[in-house]
Length: 158
Picture: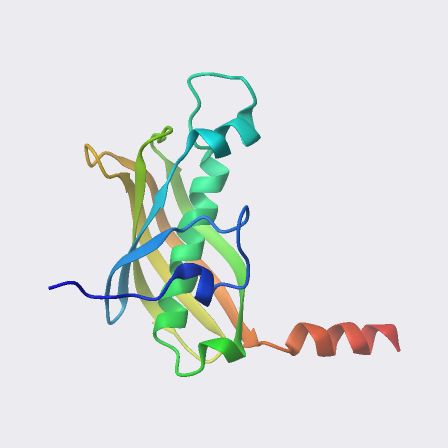
């Protein structure tokens, strides 16, 4: 039996090359697991001819944070009406890297949520051998109404 999950590109407000989550593989209340397939193509665009290329730690963190955002949106009644803004991350430990042809698996857990913020914890690992490549003690995302930045920009122009 296969459980279907929405396409991350349908939930997050951007696509290639900014989208760094390919698929949601598991979602239960308060937890989500998502994967990112690392390709030679994207490593070439970030690293040029440097070989062997490893997925940059900054992009691994961005991918992890997108998985956190997907968890909030999966558990929201009106995901289309929400804008997520990265707030901060603490206790970030880069313990390794993944290369082309590997899957980066993010396991994120919702620690706390209110109307304006969501706090997460989790880790990212290489799918093949299970080695942990990234750990995050706390990541905080701000939750705003989708039009809130438009309203703020209009007020600043006056």
